Structures are given as C-alpha cells and as structure tokens.
Length: 172
Image 1 (tube, helix red, strand yellow):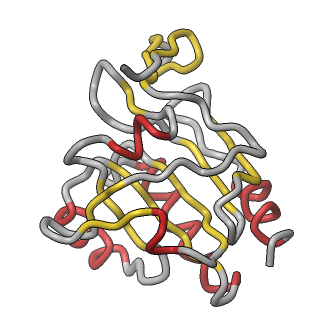
Image 2 (cartoon, one colour):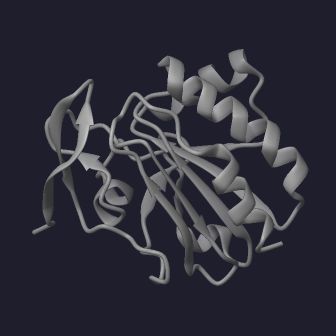
C-alpha cells in the first residue's frame, strides 16, 4: 500500500493528502507507466539517455497549469536535443492533445496518468481527495538519477521556473 502524507500541501489553503513516497535528490527515479494517447503507453525507459524535466500539473485547463506548460514549452526550444520536457497530468490524452493544439504547444510532450495513477503514486504527487496530481517539478539526469525536486506546498502557486531550468542546464 502506498504511503499517505498529510499536512505537506494545500489546495486554496485547505489541507490535502498526497499518496506515494516522496522522491528526493539523489534517488534513482522511479519507473512509471502513463498514456501518450488512449491506447499507447510510455514509461521512463522511453526517454532513456536524455535529461528529463518533468513538469507535473493538476489540469492543463487551469490558469497556472496553462502558464507553467507554456513557459516550459518556450524553454524546451532552448535546451537542446539531449533534453526532453514532459508534462504529466490526469487529463485525458485527447483533452491534452486538444489543449496543446489550441495553445500551440509543440516542444513539450504531454502524458496522462489518468488510467492507474502510476506516476502519481511513484512520485508521491497523487492527491487522495480529488485524484489529481499535485503541482511539482522533477529533473532527472540522462541516467535517471533525480537531480532536482520541487514539491509545491500550495497547489495554486507557480513553481520556481528559473531553478528548474538551471538544474537542467547543469546537466547538458
């Protein structure tokens, strides 16, 4: 059974429970299975050999998530071919594709954890009460070692974009 952590995060000031183990810098990144579309899945191994910036958002259809994904899409173009930027949410894959098309997102890969919450529990970001993912950032080196982690304390706040990008730049 996955660990539950309470008192570490809020949604508009209200406490929420995160399910799964907290990932820390220095850990080997946990594997996960998410969906690229309704039928095709992806795992951590699909991005082997690349530096990975994993941007976790509750839903692309909210203001902060929209801004976060757009910002990392802009940055992705500057980071080079050895870096992949993944945005993971529980939005359905066709909703992610529709949103990306409308927003002009073409550098970030959107992945959905809707099916079995594999990513959410592996990285300790599944919100028990509402089955969304807590906003967070993970940077993994090319060997899948965790180099940077930001778990936000309040779901509606922005992550530290500059620190995340700097963590990636140190690896390329």
